[in-house]
Structures are given as structure tokens and as C-alpha cells.
Length: 362
Image 1: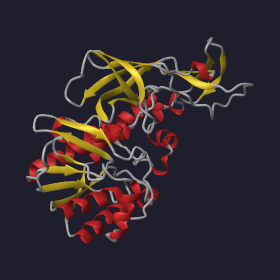
Image 2: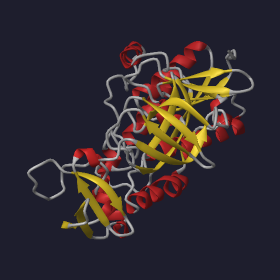
Image 3: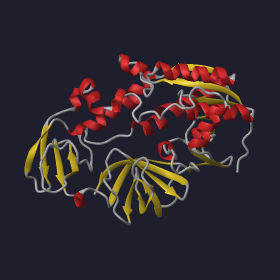
Image 4: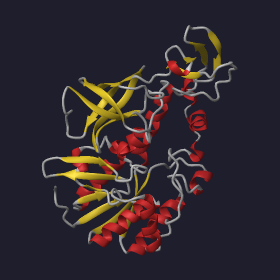
């Protein structure tokens, strides 16, 4: 186990309770702490500027600065909105146009937030970077491992699997061995204004978390009408864009049926949404692409592991077969609604081995 030496650490501070306490814990441990708040999204309406659930919230940035003042640490705001738009927002719209269901939070950690924290740390001569994520780090001077958080209810390792060794080797996750209750108690004890702040929304750049309205307003080209068909190809109705649907969806289909019907397939080229019974929803196999392996390579060409096929779902036993750019996962028991565009993250016990973006499922 690598010994963690006290030094200068940059802490990503969102204004929420988790990152606030992470900064406080590191300050108490003796680190020289600098808080960093990223401005990700400048194209905001008035509501999102004041909505505390939005990353555009001025209140969030003010809270982060207030926390830094209480802790007696330096704080800086960095505008990375251009990078965020190109790397996250535009691909988000493209994925929905393809009939896939993306997870921009995972992409943001791997492409924007952590690379930027690492670059800032290098420029400032800081030895470490940290966030309030519920995950753990283990390893030595040669290689760093990513582990699930001790609190499985709050574990966020899924969202971090795309981090590179150059980032993981600098990372500290002070909250990884703690529960949410402990974090809130620590915030209250320290008198931090974020102590009772509610959880942030999943899609931080969309006010109200309504991605359909967001796409319609900003990326109308992603919404092209088409047909709803059954698994035999029979036309059942029309839709206003494949972006409005996801695998396993039941509500909002606009169809009447004596039995429950679900989205089983989305074909963006044909502009078709296929529906069928629950047994026809993909759940036995997936193929993932753009794979990232935490150690830099897979443990073997084929191996047994567990896969988390969407955020907050339990890891499920499966057989992994690796390929040049990805892998296949064959599940022992069917799972519900494997969804292209989501991330399939591979675990062995608490250790994150790697993962990829689901391209195909059945």
C-alpha cells in the first residue's frame, strides 16, 4: 500500500456537502488545500442560474467560496465551459439522435473534470487532486487501483472508471470510507452551509432534468419523426423522434395494449422504435466499445467478473470476452433493459477492472 504523504491538494468543490467535507477532512489531515470550482455551462436561462440543483447555479459557486472561507483555504473558479460543451453537451445530443441513452456524468469525469484538475495540479505544483466522490484508491508506486466506496448505497466508482492512471495516481477520495450520514454530521459539526443541501440532479447542465425539452430547444435536428412497430414489423403508430425513447421504457408510448409493452429496440437509421413484451427487452448479453482498463490492460482475454450495466444497479455475475476495442459480457441470469449508450463497468469484488460504452445488446 502506497503511503499518502501530506502535501498540496486541489479539491474539486461543487458547493455540495460531499466536496465541502472532502476539503475539510484534508485540511484537518494537514494538507495545503486549494478549492477549485469549475464553471461548466455558460448558456443558462434565468431559472438555471438560481436553481440550486444546476451546475450553472450562482448559489453553488457562492457556497463553495463560502465554505473555503470558513475552512481558511484558497479558492478559485475556472471557466471550462468551451471544453464541456464540445466534449460533453454536443456528444450528449448526438447519442440521443442515434437512439442511444448516454451518461454524460461518466464522460465528464473522464474527459473534462479530472484531466483539468490534474493539469491545474501540475501547473501549480500540487501533489494530489481530490473530490467528494464515494470511492477508494489503493495501490503502490507502480499502479493504482480504483475500489468501490465502503458505503455501497453511495458508491460512485461506476462514474470514475474512465480515469487514467495519471489521474488515479494523484487522487484522494476522503469520503470513500464514510457514509452519507457521517458526511452530513461532519459538515454540521464544521458549521458548513452545505450541510443540509439536497442531492444535485443527475444531468447538471439541464435545468429541471428534462432532457427532452433541452434537446427540442437546443438540438431540434436530433428529433426526426418515425414509426413505432412491433417485433414482427407491424406499424402501431408514430413518434416524434427516437431521442424520446430508451430501452425498457413503458410509459409515454402513446399506445393501448391489453398487456404491458416496452421499448425493445431503437433503430435510428430507419427511425423506428420497436416495442414488445418484457421477455423481448435486452437482458442476456452486451457488447461494449471504447473500453478503458484501470490497469491499462484487461486481466485476461476471457474471465469471470461482475458487471454494473447502469448507474446504481447491482453488479451482476457474467463471463467477459475481450476484443480489440471492447468486450462482450454474457450474463448468467437475465438483467433488465441493457441500454446502448450506457456504461458497462466491470468489477471483481470491490475492485473496478474497467468498462466500456454499451454498443449492442440482446
